[in-house]
Image (cartoon, rainbow, N blue to C red; front, side, top):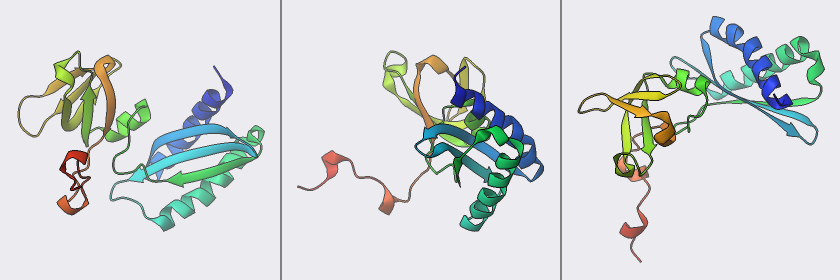
Length: 169
């Protein structure tokens, strides 16, 4: 296993119980090599949401925790922020956090004519995703056929992207 992946797992194992005891969810953890050391990016959330001051406090606190508990980490830069409104969901951490939330799954053209299925993420396992659309029966999707899974946010009409074909020239 390569070093950033091993370090990512160490950080997750260290922070999950700590954050959970405070009612905060670790949505994602990314570790990259940066020119001045390592760069660690954490996405956090909690019931009712978080604000900028919350993220600033968690950044200061978690910097101290990481430096104290992982002394071999060396120089690092920590970024703590929001998961975002339309986050692309890739990891098991992200899927666990997204359970019960509205998602959009783009399915390969070979299956279901390349449609996008929008619904509440009910469950997942290594092979399937179970979504409950607003109307109709529950859908089980083969994870290998899902080319992208992201949170689905219904933007108010005035903020929606305009389709290129509908723009006036």
